[in-house]
Length: 230
Image (cartoon, rainbow, N blue to C red):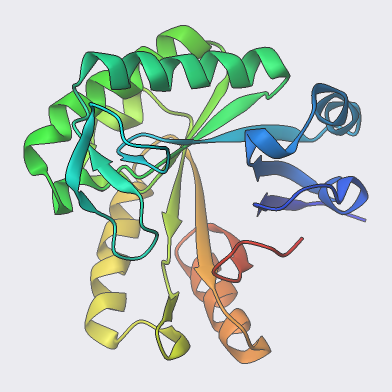
């Protein structure tokens, strides 16, 4: 049976299910080195989650007062030296733990603190230097293109076709779908692995997201808001 391209799973365990994928994105705190070795032996490439512009930890000098309204994490000053050291340290620890690469999340600072875009690029480049030759997968980060494409190996278009809302799961309205399509066409010009990550709770919405991903040359993954499915 052919394996699916990628799984984003933020729970723990489920090694046999994860073995059905070529790549899996996992939370580093939930997996021991022995489990990562097992997945590597199954020819699964494991990518450790890494947040680059938001901090879920206790109060720290790099944190801004503003917080992410969806997840509650604190936005950070991306160029703060202690934050840079913290994130690069997390990256090195994940690789030493046995992860084959990293998933770089919270890259959309152009929407919140656009002045941090060059600092975020510098941080991504620092991670690349420390983690080389590990695989780097970026979540969106469109405000850093085309420079970002020179640093990472792949890009995920999160919520390309379907999203979660306070009222449940739904497709984006037509104008947003059209805007996302324009971005996807630009991504296809890059020599990168391209994925979509959509959110759905019905077969119909799942089929819509997967069909649209194929239409735009993206390898599809569909899950729930908590990324609890394998």
